[in-house]
Length: 134
Image (tube, rainbow, N blue to C red; front, side, top):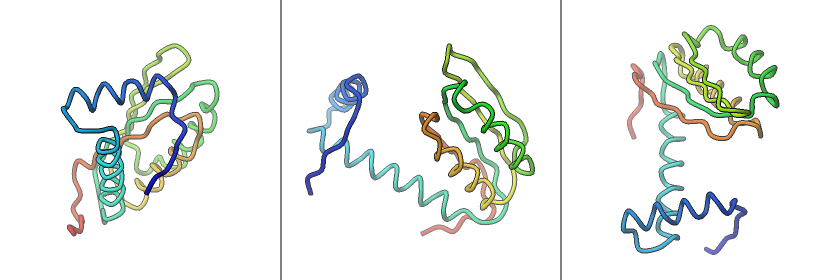
C-alpha cells in the first residue's frame, strides 16, 4: 500500500542518513521496520498486567505544557516514584520512574502522548510480574 505523510525536512534527512548507515536497502524498508517497532512496543505495554516497574522518558515544550504536566503528575502520583527534569532552552527532557499497576502506568503514558507539545514518549518496562507473553 502506498501512503503519504508530512515529515519535517530535518527529520527525514536524519532518517535517511540512519537507514543508509545501517545498510538497509530502502527508505520503505526502514519505515516498515520503524512501524513494526512502534506496534511491538504498543503491544508490550498493552499486555502488561499487575505491578510493573517502568521508566517513561519524554521531551516537551516547557511553556506550552507545564501546568497540564503538573496536573497529570499529581493525578498519577500513586505510580510515580520520582522524576528527573532537564532544561534545554524552551525544550525539556523528563524521566519518570514508575512502580504500580500496569493499567495506571499505561494510562499515564497515553495521557502524555496526547499532547501536541510532547515530542516523543519512550517507555521501558523494567519489571512486569504479570506480563502475558504472546
